[in-house]
Image (cartoon, rainbow, N blue to C red):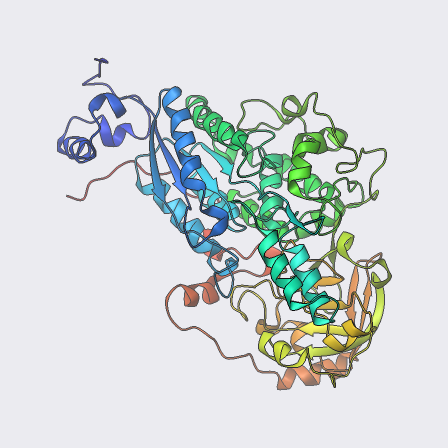
Length: 579
């Protein structure tokens, strides 16, 4: 039997629960032994939490129980004691109005689970869009050694000889259906052909983007972001993460050591190079707020011009995540822009960024372009300012019709998503190809939760005329799988009196991406008169978490975190008994 010291503590956090010789220690050990483990299983060993958002309600996360077993195997190999625990599971496809409403709730769940249990380190299993940022936000605030294992993308969809991806091709073929160019039978075939394995969306949507950004930040093992969910190599990655978390505990490497300004700049560079989701901006701002790093929204725009767009994936390009993995994945991208990165930034691998990407090569230059032959010399995402968005707005220019990047048109205003749904199919809707669709009351407070309503459907009458893109503006988000000339995250939002609340049908709106401007061409005196008669919309929720959200959520330009969760948290306290 292993010799267990009776009078000395290991110095680990879990020792405050399991290695003390008083009544509390007795009770902690006794209760744990009721699960069938013995002293040899946990006394004197690092205790590793496995934070698991597995759920049968979330298709992206349904395979995470299997990954947890692989993590446990790795922990045991490295001499740790693994304990899996559940956290809130967020799934964009079924959860209404949006998982973004509950991102901060899940982050609180993860943080408090880590803080309150005898954990020396944690492995974060993540899948669907907001589970990744929520887990990282919680772990960053708890600040004990942590490593992320993402669930991986689905296999490519196939329909009639074409590769199709969720949900970029959902939007595309739904427009084809509304325009009468495909049949209902075709639509059903596409539904049955698109999502054919476990995993998150296989386009460069938010889940894929956040997996890549997590790798760029140094929070997951290199090469892991793009491995398909059902590929055995994802289990290899999970097992390796289980071993590595024990090493991180021994080295006392915490999220605060990794999430530096340099790491955030690396992540923003990769975000532009992969033409990632606009949602990543919100999440990175929230991370920075948690660890006390100054990360202004404008930095995303400053790094755009000098970062080449290299990855040709839907919705901005042609390929899917499975192709991206075979082409070399994130290491190959980072190797191409190595001269723009902080190569000495540390990562959970125990090596620097430079060491992680040394020797990484592009296998398929159609999927990942070289820096010498980019898809575009500049990046993917821009930050706009102007009279319509004084605190900023964002736009994914790589997914927009270039002719609309400098545009002037008259507004068609929709008060909310219900107004939009009621009128967008109306053949008598007054609109043309120059119109600017405006949706308000879709922001963090107004919606609530800032849902993915920003991809406003093009009016049916215009689709039938052959219009394929239209300038659309809102205080909402959009799915990372979406595309089009869409301006998002307008701040301040309309529900708190932002200028979007004052727009009326027929107002002229000017967009000039080159100048980074979005302006409402209305006389200031007229706007003052409108503001004088404006009243905020009624609150939708007066109880529970939704009330807390509306009371304390920050605006999009600050990452939509809760104001009381920003800043570095206090050191995780030792075990205290209240018996």
